[in-house]
Image 1 (cartoon, rainbow, N blue to C red):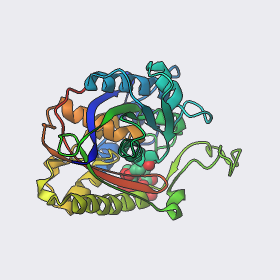
Image 2: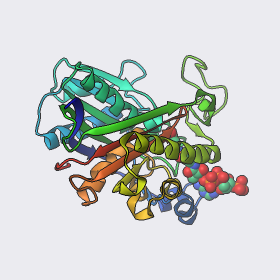
Image 3: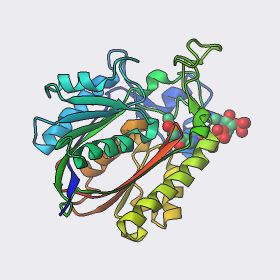
Image 4: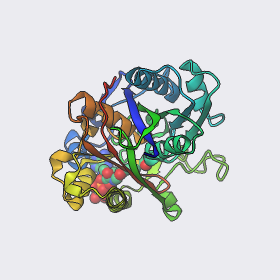
Length: 330
Ligand code: ACO
């Protein structure tokens, strides 16, 4: 048997503060009816000024380590769009705060696809023999890059974190990451972008240029197309017929996107896990947060075939297939 990467631990964390659609409607020209019917989102968790991405990452990471029943790893990979600082990366401080010592630690940036890129990166460390155990975290204080007065983005995004532990193991073991597919199209970079603050445009030219802008409609269309294509690619690699998938855990951006992806893959809507109604789009945190939620709600059983897929800024996308392990999520 070959050296495979096994998912052995899972945890999540969200800030306590809840922002409901009604609260948004009280401060901008929107309504609960519009947000629910166009996105499926009812409320989201938001960070208060004393909470940064690294704080959520530490909490989710600690939960994942507890779930895996381990207190040491060889590397920490943190997927985030909202690092604590532009320099340095946030992962080393998260590793130190978790008491993991002087391990390799770095950030991965692929916006809403970030966690799947992080999984691929962590799995690559394991399969190359560079690490035997890796903590992969997706964490965001995404609302810190959203204009609170912009009705095209403020209702969509929320904050949170999720984390998994990956370990080297036998490829026949439950929890094995069976196949990956990743892609990007840099010609679509302007669909999701913070115009100012990087080395290209150092200072804002127009008010609000320091916040994320999203062209909703083309993002929607590309998200469906690429998540379906990427999912089909991993299903082909695994040899799994689409109907054998027990749970589709897609990036939680919009319930209409999740159902469109399920429809095109020939899966009933019940197999598309949805928790965006309570958390909104938490970007790189979305998939591990959804996995932890699904596990806690009894939607994931040992041996289930699970398909993960995401689309995000870049544009980037990906899909991962795995057989669900026996674990307790925190
Ligand atoms: N409340 C009320 N009306 C609104 C709101 C709002 N919050 N936002 C927009 N509208 C209006 C618009 O002004 C427009 O009005 P008009 O017809 O008079 O011009 C109308 O509603 C339709 O606007 P659209 O933007 O076309 O609405 P759409 O149905 O496309 O929904 C949404 C917008 C929810 C953003 C959708 O396009 C979407 O989900 N896109 C994909 C997002 C996604 O997948 N993101 C993942 C990646 S994100 C990342 O990587 C960071």
